[in-house]
Image (cartoon, rainbow, N blue to C red; front, side, top):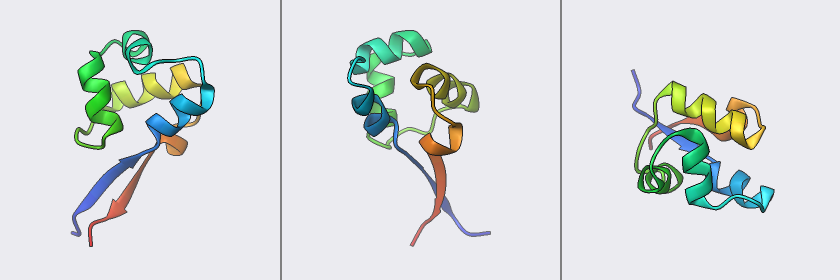
Length: 72
């Protein structure tokens, strides 16, 4: 099985909304701002529960935020 990386567009979607800081999104999702920073920097793979909560808060489909990419 190939190694895959989880990629995300959380920061892009948050900024596109224009009304949420990283800290505000983190609070609504139920994680720390530091955790949200790591998720946005793609240095931390969140649980599916956190992924679903982020999608709900940002009002986007899950596959618009997170996808798997083959590691080269």
